[in-house]
Length: 126
Image 1 (cartoon, one colour):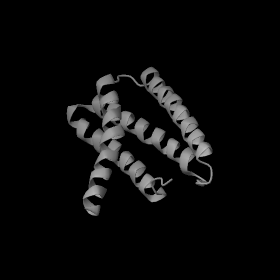
Image 2: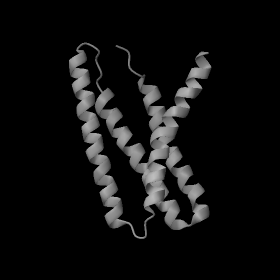
Image 3: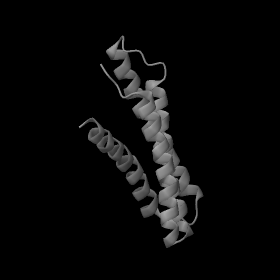
Image 4: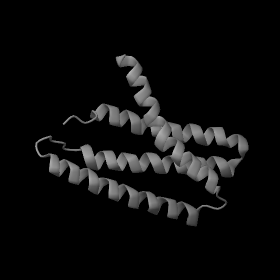
């Protein structure tokens, strides 16, 4: 069983953090509320994925696939709970808040960055 290397995982999480900053800066053109909301949404995605990666791949050993699957499943459930808590905290504490910018940035950082990394790596291997 081969999993993505730790350096690739670190790269994706670091790029997600960078993307959160970039999204926030781009949304600054639409106002501070959009910029802060976008940054927070991207940050939620990056932090949650960083937590998942840490829980899943720290002390990784490919000796028992059932333990690996259980560990990843548990980490994913924990990530979802943490994500929900962070969204709830953001919605309750940040005023004013743009829900559209918050969720849109979260989705962008969650999906676009890993997809871009995979496309770049695929082109390098072709």
